Length: 417
Ligand SMILES: Cc1cc2nc3c(=O)[nH]c(=O)nc-3n(C[C@H](O)[C@H](O)[C@H](O)COP(=O)(O)OP(=O)(O)OC[C@H]3O[C@@H](n4cnc5c(N)ncnc54)[C@H](O)[C@@H]3O)c2cc1C
Image 1 (tube, rainbow, N blue to C red):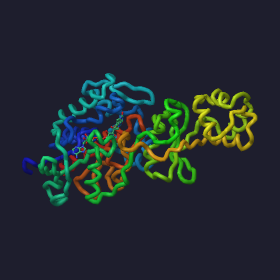
Image 2: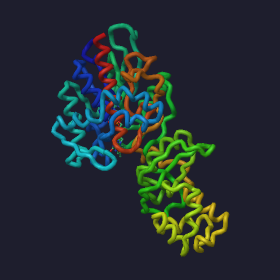
Image 3: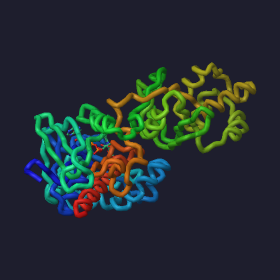
Image 4: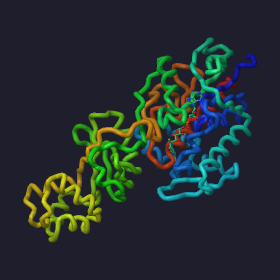
């Protein structure tokens, strides 16, 4: 190999790229990371509202179902090798203690995402990885023979430089929050190579709905947000806080539904169960015995905000008369709204507001132990490029760190033959 040849070339110095770099370099590989931005790990620095929810306290087997059946199975090995405990140890060993908050979310004790970014960059550099900033990769090409000893991949940079590598790890992220530099370039390269992709779509974005602005500012702590398919079957349910905004729905419950909704836009609906602990038939038999103004009764009995209840009665043309005076069809209508309210969501607010990317490289094309593409020896894909995403709570970073580390390990071990 000549001076421009690298053993392991990593494109993107974000969460997955840093994990891959540290792992490959610590196993003795010569590693170079190229990053288009002038600082590494920009998304880590802005994550978690500037506090970085870097992982969770859940163990791999508890977390696995949260990535869906296929995603969970694909990630099984990577999550076990890079557990949430391992991730905490990475930053703690660099002098950044962590703390646990509600829902098992792990943050740096300092409350500064910057500290996590600095720790992960230091860890990769200490392992021996080189990081080159302000270097945008433009194109990726396959060269040489997959079985031969020399470089197998060539990368052209925006500075007209050509770098060759035995092993190439793509860690350029997806399309979410494009202003941070992730504009989907990785997907274009993979598409032109002929790699199978599930169309990338926004994940963990707020949801858009018209007509909810009168409810802006209301938070529901105890509702269940659901995605239902064309037959009404529940495909995903989330019992987490839901926030009404001027543009629609936000908060963890809404954002967790985003990927499932966007994956088959047009054929799936968002439905809200406003009293998830109470079956519809129980509501029907108990609620309508309570006298007094309908809105206030519902507020009191179901612990719902008065503004929400009044809005629901009004838009559904239900009377304000006392509940015992509701006619049979009015009773059924009210129960249906309380248990299966369709707030009119059709899509999310899109990639500009999305914290993650759904879709991406089809999992059946990837070796789950090494993240190497089965049809492209020496090419590994990580993080948001893969067709797997998880809920709010440190799970996106876990995917990126675990798949990045798996790729780094796989790349380094393959060099040893
Ligand atoms: C506002 C916000 C808050 C978030 N908060 C959290 C949180 O608290 N917890 C959590 O788990 N997840 C959070 N996420 C999600 C998490 O940040 C991402 O899922 C994770 O960073 C993805 O890792 P990645 O390595 O795949 O991509 P990234 O971390 O996005 O890294 C990709 C890197 O590649 C670089 N790059 C792109 N194209 C090129 C190119 N052509 N050449 C060279 N370099 C390139 C980019 O500049 C970037 O540095 C948040 C996301 C956002 C947007």
